[in-house]
Amino acid sequence: MIYRENNKLIPKRGYRGKHGKNNFSKENLIKGVKEYSILTISLVLVVVGYVSYLSKYQKTNEASSEADKVADIGDATLVDSKDISKNDSSVEEDELRKKEEAVANKDKVENEKSEKEAENIETNAKPETDEYFISSRLERENMYSQTIETYQKILENSNCSVEQRNEASDKINEINKTKNSIMIAENLIKTKGFEDCIVFVNSDSVSIVIKKKELSNEDIAKIQNIAARELAEKIENIHISNKY
Image (cartoon, rainbow, N blue to C red; front, side, top):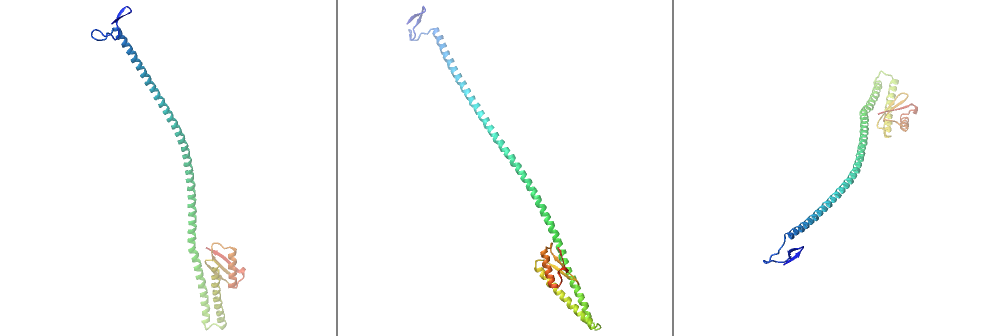
């Protein structure tokens, strides 16, 4: 079927010819190709635009994530800085405490050393002090023994007069009495809390040595009272000293 268009005879669309086929002209083919190309280009532009949108959206999300990371790092850095500051303060306090402990330990060691040296001095001095009291007591006993022995020879000597023998006997009794008084006085003094003592009775005085580091006025008064009573001596004639 043919119709006229622009003074041209154009087969009507959809009209089949003699053999049942569509009759398309060259112009219709070109027009169809153009329409298809335009549609294809439009689709490509839409796809490109969508892809571009996705790319921008992804970059925006990545930028936001990076910003969050930076913010987190900043917070973490701030916290770390505070922790470091606290740690530095703790380190300084620990060092100060260690220095104080070192000084205290040094002082303690020095004090212990001084105390130990003092103890050693006292320990070394005690044997000498003990030896003094032992040797002094032994010398005193030897002196009395020798004196008694001398008087005893007078008593046994027939050539001596009666008066000489009586006087020798009185001297022996006096020495024994003095020895007994000394023994009682020393024992009484020790009962007052003194470790040791020795009493020397002279013709006109009494000397007493006490084993003690220091003597108080009360100590002296106790010793004088005992010596005055047991040795029948005046207080002013009793001389007291200490040895340690």
